[in-house]
Amino acid sequence: MSMKRKIVIVMFGVMLYCIISVIIGIGESNNIKSEYKEGSEEIENVDIKEKSNESLLQNIKVLDDWRLILVNHNIMLTEDYEVKLSNIDSTRQFDSRAIDELNQMIKDMKKDGISNIWVQSAYRSIEYQKELFDNQVQKYINQGKTKEEAEKLTLQIINKPGTSEHNLGLAVDLNYVNYEFEYTKAFKWLQENAENYGFILRYKREKEDITKVDYEPWHWRYVGVENAKKMNELDMCLEEYIDYLTNSVIK
Ligand SMILES: [Zn+2]
Image: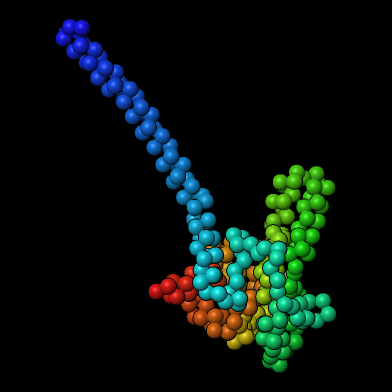
């Protein structure tokens, strides 16, 4: 082969290599762009939720305090969650470790002249919650809704089994589970005194963005006296407080 021919072949090879590289390069940069786009959408839609879920779960492990067990739209109790219960009355039950404080609080309210106070709803088993949920879904299906529509509508009125604080046995709904409760003497008393018995107003109006639960003046959660006082002092909901405590522990 002549020298001239060799040079032509080598040059042709180099050109071919350049052309292929350019084509592949463009393809790759497109891939990077679309991956980046998908990634950034994920950050908006999923990441924050899952990240906070993960870190909260980790936080609870660090704290190891049964009074601060967190269940919410993200963190579900598993069906094997066991709690020792004591009776509030013939039909209602509460966590045995905190029932004395609950009883004492109701007793002291009455002593302070608030006779119109009662526990409407306390512990609910996950199984019972599931029954309530499934019955409601079936009702909607019977009305002609699809399963998906029925579940969506049910979620507006009943918590998914395992995501209710009532499944923990550490929360009570007082009186008529009604927004009028906010304007009663009982509510005012609770706002001033519930922390002394270890109870907090769990779903505050100004914390809806974090709790993802609408304001509920009737729903009071036991967290223990020192936690309740600290949370009120710092104006934090349970999610914020767990995060705060964990950071203090680690620092
Ligand atoms: Zn409740």
